[in-house]
Image (tube, rainbow, N blue to C red; front, side, top):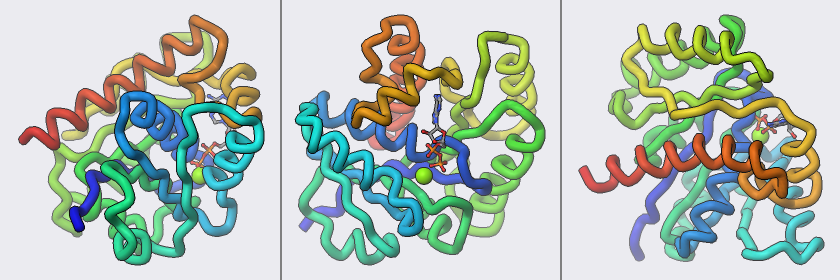
Length: 217
Ligand SMILES: Nc1ncnc2c1ncn2[C@@H]1O[C@H](COP(=O)(O)OP(=O)(O)O)[C@@H](O)[C@H]1O
Ligand SMILES: [Mg+2]
């Protein structure tokens, strides 16, 4: 039994858009032909699990398996059924977040653009590296909760540029079309609206590129 590759979406605060990115990665890798499974570790909200059921009921293809687990060890003990695990982390950082970090080759930390959102995420990233020995290159930030204005995105990118962490290309805007895509069982990269779809794809493709480099290293 081979340990699957793994990507984790984690955050210090709740509502950072972890499940949003996990679902976009899940659909993207499945379409690309990877046997992908989203591991939903948010047992309280089960956001990805419920979304997977909506997707199944709506008959949307490809089918993206989602499974709810109480912890990383339980998920890993049944590994072997996928090439790639996408860990959708618990609502906020717990000791399980550290276990996700240790199991993954790439960690995506979604963040809003305010200091209120950036600071706790940077502090989580620092603690993973400094207190838990997670290699710094495994951690990337994703700029989320953007509006139509580019200045806040640019400012957040500059702020993160002063840390040792990489930032994915592009940003994800708060948009009704993404919300309705997810309501319908699609991911943000599957919205029928061309412009927003291209923007979401840019961010997710940047994560795919990082992951390729990390697994090749
Ligand atoms: N790009 C977006 N535009 C609009 N709403 C979004 C977007 N991304 C996420 N949401 C909504 O924001 C809320 C939190 O997102 P979610 O991905 O569940 O965060 P987390 O998993 O970090 O708690 C959810 O209601 C989700 O549907
Ligand atoms: Mg979630």
